Amino acid sequence: MARITAGVGCSHVPAIGVAMDTGITDEPYWQPVFDGFKKSREWMKQQNPDVIFLVYNDHCTAFDASCIPTFALGCAAEFTPADEGWGPRPVPVVKNHQKLASHIAQSLVLDEFDITIMNEMEVDHGLTVPLSVMYGEVPQDGEWPALVIPLAVNVVQYPAPTGNRCYNLGKAIRRAIDAYDEDLNVMIFGTGGMSHQLQYKRAGLINADWDNRFLDMMANDPVAASQIKHVEYLRETGSEGIEMVMWLVMRGALDEKVTEVHRHYHVPASNTAVGHIILENHD
Amino acid sequence: MADRSDKPYEDIPGTFVFDADRSREGYHLNQFCISLRLQKNREAFNAGEEAYLDKYPMTAEQREAVLKRDWNRLLELGGNIYYTSKLAANDGINFQNLAGLMTGMGVEAYRDMMLHGGRPIEGNRSKSEWEEE
Ligand SMILES: [Fe+2]
Image (cartoon, rainbow over all chains, first blue to last red):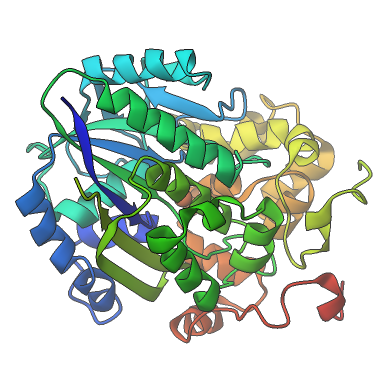
């Protein structure tokens, strides 16, 4: 049977992708960002997942304002890295486990989570940067070591889905994967955040105390985290900090009690607080 | 402008929450901005901005803010940062430098603030803490 072995929370700052793509990760500015992923890359090699269920948001790249699905599940055979305005990232095409993705789509709708199905979709830094930081550099003509099922969440137009909804969706994803009859090691990534505001006069807001409490809750008290209201994210963590609701999808798909394997927090990467946590299921 | 008094997030200083009202106001502006994510559209826009903008039925104010690259005005008129950043990218301005412009701090001072832990939350939660708003 397929099983979810671990969850990863991870920022997906576009500048981190640029730093990797231009080979400047050893510069003093970037070194502390990437040092925190050394252990993660070793861990990924050991764990070697077959499939990554990757929760992220599109940043007005594949989705324009004409259609704004709250939850969109990638069911295409593959996903091409998108041109976001400065040329596509030089990373491999992302390949799906298409049968598992369509199984999850069916299971979620029958479980009363009415997701949107995407049979054509390009993916932006929200999806490719987490893969890059967790795997390290992969040449464009190479292959990502795992298949990837993308779930794009609307966090651009208010309101994003509530943290509670995301947490419960995670549980439904867990039920779907648990019921899939192929022996697969599946990981789930929740990406985005942590505190950051990209826009207007309050741009640059960082709230390290809040972020670290959130990381604690991810490890030990996800139900409390699931009850955080939108206005708290917006006020306390910046207008773009609302991305953190996506970590709750990941957390909902894990056991209630998990083992924290690794944590990393660093300010800044461009405008953003970089947060990262690895949580393992027990069984 | 729609009445925003029933929106708890309107009290957050220096921030636009991109809700349905803003999305409606900014629709054509944002659709113009996202068109610039493709190389062929960037080339067409750069070859003649006025003619390219004719394809998007935005308001005269929005159009003027685009032509003037008035980044804050674009947000005030319903633009969203993920869209306006595509116009900035076309001009060679990344997210961090765009923030330097929007905050009025300038690129160097903004970058320096980020290197020292960013803008603190204390004093930045509510409009009542900001003198100007
Ligand atoms: Fe993001």
